[in-house]
Amino acid sequence: MPAKRRVAQLVMLAFAVLIVMVAYANVGLAIDEQIPSGMLTYGLGLGGLMLAAYLVLARFAPWADPLLLPLVTLVNGIGLVMIYRIERGGEDLASATNQLIMTGAGVVLFTVTLIALRDHRALQRLTYTSGFIGLFLLVSPLIPGLGKEINGARIWIGFGPATIQPAEFAKLALVVFFAGYLVAKRDVLALAGRRLLFIDLPRARDLGPVLITWGVSLGVLVMQKDLGSSLLLFGTFIVMLYIATQRTSWVLIGILLFVGGAFVASQLFDHVQQRIDVWLNPENDELFRKVGGSEQLMQGLFAMGAGGILGTGLGQGHPSLIPLSFSDFIFAAVGEELGLTGVMAILMVYALIVERGLRTSLSARDPFSKLLAGGLSFLLAWQVFIIVGGVTNLIPLTGLVTPFMSQGGSALLANWVLIALLVRMSDAARRPPPQAIQNEGLTQVFQR
Image (cartoon, rainbow, N blue to C red; front, side):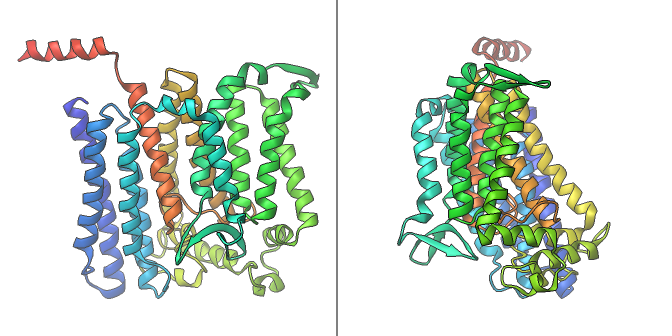
């Protein structure tokens, strides 16, 4: 990596940590009228973790996109600040210390992924293995004695007091499977069958993979009561299928299949129908008072409305009124205290992360890398859309968490692995040919 790029990346990383520390200080000043006593501990903890991540990146992926790590640091840090603020507001389940520890674990997984996976193309040889692992992780909460039902959804597995949400890791394995499978089968899947109006429909014999994925996603929706993972899984597959074949008909078929399947499920299963009812009539008094009803959604909407354009200010809102404000509804807490301005700024940071991932996809030199980078980028973007859409009542609530911000170990760890994969692929895409590196070295020698 050129020296100027290293310095620029380190400066951006330090600036991201500085923004987080200023926000942390604002929380303390608003609540206690003094700088928080633990500010130095949190600052050194976060700064030390990100410095370690930077050193690993500089050593093992020197040509990687320099913006990815600072952007992720900023979002992760703002999440820490909000969790600390909610904890100080009296929420017993919120713990900024635990979130910092899980951030450290995420950086460890980031490091292990970069060191162990020197060539991401090796994952293509594990296409069907990844698919099997992904499916096993997805259905593991249904195994008697292993799975646990929490807050009405059976998406957890437990080992004593510890719980893990395996779907967070399953989505990464399944994206690897989708990329490998579609690279091998894209020529067949791109063949057109009959033409309906202005759309070339795929051949009926090629609908098998779509129907299987559709069936699995609906199974997750019905058996695990997990609308979020179901929508995330099927949506990601359809978009990757479109990237591989460039056929709009696959997208239309996917939308029709999922909407139709969800409608049928809502007529047959009460928990699906309740999600739809809460979405359509959140102000209904009966739904508001019902367990698992619309109280969380309405409190979140009230909070964002109170925040207005500029917000109430860090430490000056009432996020404790929102159930699970440190987890599912942390975006609503941000909307209250930072307002529409802060919300748009955070969404812009997410958009930049996704844009860098898509740029990596466009720059990749082989089809597998293009599909994998595109799929992982869309996975992150789709997850942000689903959670923000649910919190703002644009779509039904799904139970997903805001990437890097919400308290929760499984999602945070999985997303740090996702970033490590994007970093590895961007390093391969941006790395100049060996001859160019040799010539650059000779030029530097002559200049000296």
